[in-house]
Amino acid sequence: MNRGTRLGLGLAAPALALVAAFALTSLVLVIAGDPVGEVWETILAPPGARNVANIVNNASVLYLSGIAVAIGFRMNLFNIGVDGQYRIAAFAAAVVAGENLLPGYLNTALAIIAAMLVGAAWAGIAGLLRAYRGVSEVISTIMLNFISTGLVAYFLRQVAVREEGSNIIATATIENGRVPSIPVPGSETTEIYGFVVIAAVVGALYWFVLNRTRFGFDLRATGASPTAAVASGISVKRMTVVAMLLSGAIAGLVGLPILLGDAYAYGSTFQSGLGFAGIAIALLGRNHPIGVALGALLFAFLDEQSNALQILVGVAPEIVQITQGVIVLTVVISYEVVRRYARRLEQQQVSKVVEDDRAGPSDDATTTEEARA
Image (cartoon, rainbow, N blue to C red; front, side, top):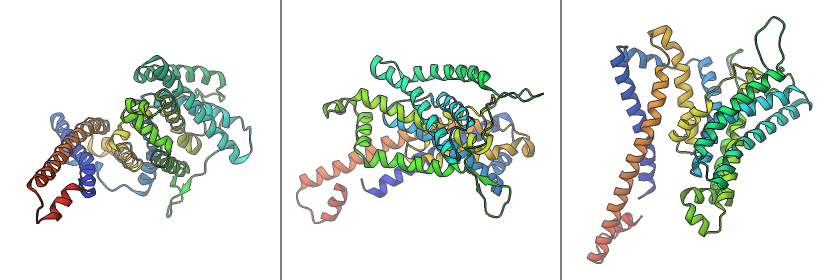
């Protein structure tokens, strides 16, 4: 199978998933009696400058979540605990940054390191249970999500700074350690999180480590075949723990664009649910950094455009959540359909090569060589 065919099949799967999601969501709208045309016209309308900034900001958060999940997927580990990992990590970062232990950007670096360490430690619990006790990481990470929610709620009450006459519960405001925003040209009020740059660096490092280092090869080999990895001298237990640690470390960064770029404190209303969105985005992007980026932008675009549905069309914006859920289902099905088609195509090409060899030297050698390729 040549490179062009592989690229076409790689693009066909997400395209098929999006078309199917579009059709199924339209069917839901028809059944509900909602105006299908107006809904899609509103969602697909060109966003303004402020909307674009919101999309990029939200996408940077979702991108980090998708990369965290993708690391586990490359090891056949289903890290469903990103939600709990980023929340407890963001809380730790807020407490550390709020203490102003170091001057300037050193305080920012300290908060980032604290978040990554806490996220890695929390995910490492599931990794150790999986490697040395055979506990499914799905079960353990779900339980850890609930535990982290309770722990953060408890410790937040212990360290919260209460304002006189206010019911708001939050950590101390971060005054020294903020990540400066990037102004959008032509607008004085629209800004993009400075953490977008860090998210892009994380994506580049993810690609480099997985594809250009021995560790990345071992990780991918262990995920593809643990038996073959053991035969090659790779410690599957060690790789399981390390993969969960790395996944948790990246998960620890998920809440930081909001914390250090907008909220500047961790409170009871801190955004949740970002870890579960990362699962869908990693699936949609096939664990590739560029694919994950496109998936994050798509989800952020749908979220931003859904805000106008209630006002302009009178349709609940939750219809976008249905679309995102359908995308997750259709992307799994479409990848399997494309995978089976690719296997059949490859078998046909191999059969043709074998038949040509049995028939002896052919005048059309070019065709045979192309089939071999």
